[in-house]
Length: 220
Image (cartoon, rainbow, N blue to C red; front, side, top):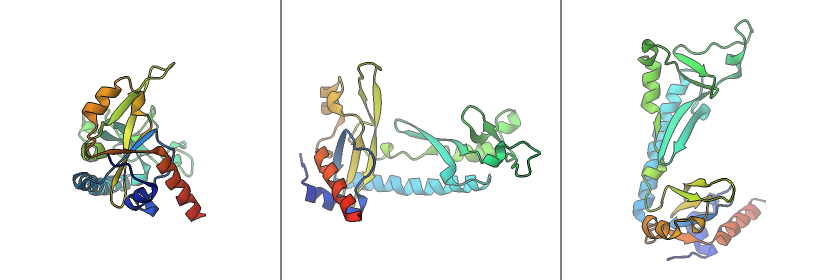
């Protein structure tokens, strides 16, 4: 199983693509051509889908950056758009902005969503347009060889499910988990049946930390 050195990992990832954010509990690298192609297909599909969401958002004075979506395993679902502050003003306020026709503010989530109160609402163009873009391409249905989630038991809280996150490098795809699979109660089955070790190669956390430190020094 390839365990890359600091220099090898830097060459595969690319100096300008070193992942930032919280340090994961575990991470992997693959250079498998099929996985790289799968990630690139997802990226292209996601970008195209984002353009469709952008077009829908424009009809209500929003942008794709205002969209909210929820991830369930390998499913990503659009749940609505952020509400402009002006839409929350009382009607007589000089800056009041009316809610777009066919839409409503969901008071539970505080998001703009298509109105579904009546049969006519449910059959409206707003609902049809929203439904057409509601299912968002999820990278986990493209890339394979790793489980989508790992369950880690917590002493007092029952347990936590950690999803797999992916990033593209120059010549690789990286995968990250916030939970260490070595801690799962199903560790052996997790390793033996869910990880394709011919494709995905687990790397040392110390290498990732060193990559970030080098990247931060280079930017200073």
